[in-house]
Length: 111
Length: 244
Image 1 (tube, rainbow over the protein chains, first blue to last red):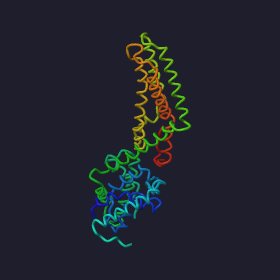
Image 2 (cartoon, helix red, strand yellow):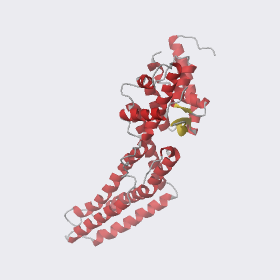
Image 3 (cartoon, rainbow over the protein chains, first blue to last red):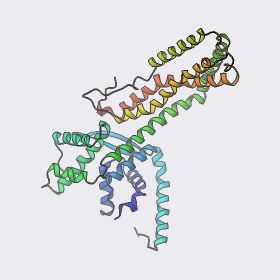
Image 4 (tube, rainbow over the protein chains, first blue to last red):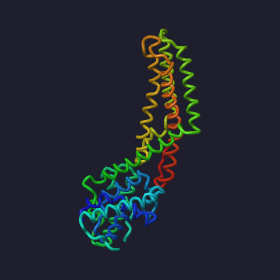
């Protein structure tokens, strides 16, 4: 899939994942998205980290570094502000998807 | 998934450094990502050597390598420091600190009013008095400067983006502090005694500038360095940063 198509949704994807998991590290996020979308979405490193840093700058994410084996790992988690933002971002995304479905006359995906 | 050896982790650090990532805090984040990706790749393709796997993983990054990642991280940290400095400074215009700010302002106002009447430019020697006063202010400011503004990593130590961005944002305050005494010089650098008198609106303006300068100087010396120390202790303790 063309990665440009979902680039604008990357922030929401990250926020959604972190709302379901207490804390995640960068590589874990890329793998989780790949797994959930059956490898349709592949987040590149070049897109992921700037997005994570951007969200951190907005005060939506906080970080914690832990010692794992012989290296350090940085975990990202939602801040209070981030948790409050989740529902707004998800409803905005739902509206956007609905709009796309209307434009392209596609059927909503049944869960 | 097989864990990488210490030698391989060190190799990754050297690799990241060679790709123009000079800051240890940024290096740590990239190294962990590369290590995870290399381990993952080799767990499914065990025939791959460590070096080949690393090469394949690095190709997933954009053509600019780690540059974009660094740039975003730098932006985040600069914004972080700006926000922290600004939030603290804003306390001086909200109760109860605003009383202190007004008191300082009135003191300066009173001082400049008195000085304005005492020192007159028709006497050449007063220009030297003004010069000495300004020099004294600079010497005084130098001792009250943020002690981490001149922080340089030791030769065998790494640089840190968190400190670099702190210094960059603090530099703006440095400039304001350096410029403040020049307003005092303006009073004495004009020909004619009453061209600019420290009375009325000019007095209030110069008092306001000096009040801001004094508050900034205090924050720069006593508050902001503590912010840096706290931040390093809270989030960068693992890096064992020597600030002194």
